[in-house]
Amino acid sequence: MFIYCDKETALFYAGYGIFNPPYEFEIMEKILNSSVIVEYMFIISKPYRDNWRAYSKIFLEKIRIPILNKDEIEKLRMLSKKEEIDEFVLWLYEGKRTGKVFVSKLF
Image (tube, rainbow, N blue to C red; front, side):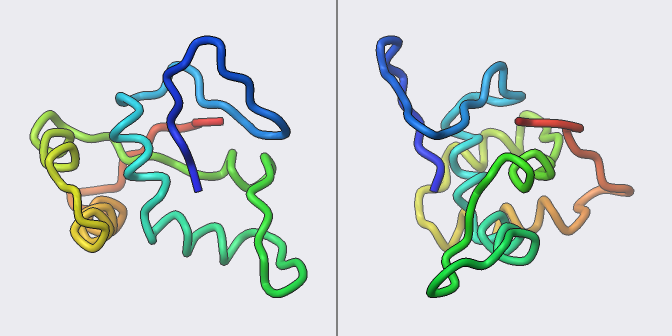
């Protein structure tokens, strides 16, 4: 799970941070916590005890974020139900436009 924290004095331990994201953190959090990314991480990451998956940097850095237009950003911002967010993010990753265009590197 990806969590957004806007406290400048916050400290995170044994984790990774996103600096200079392509979109505001609210949008990034919705994309990164979508079932699309969970499924992707399940496929590419190493299984541990009880099928637990590690979100280590070697796997996280492979995530690509779709380039969104203003309407898509606004739609994602307005969505609040998990099922709706998942459906929309899946649509984004399935190549909604001619060709798939993604931000090249996130982590």
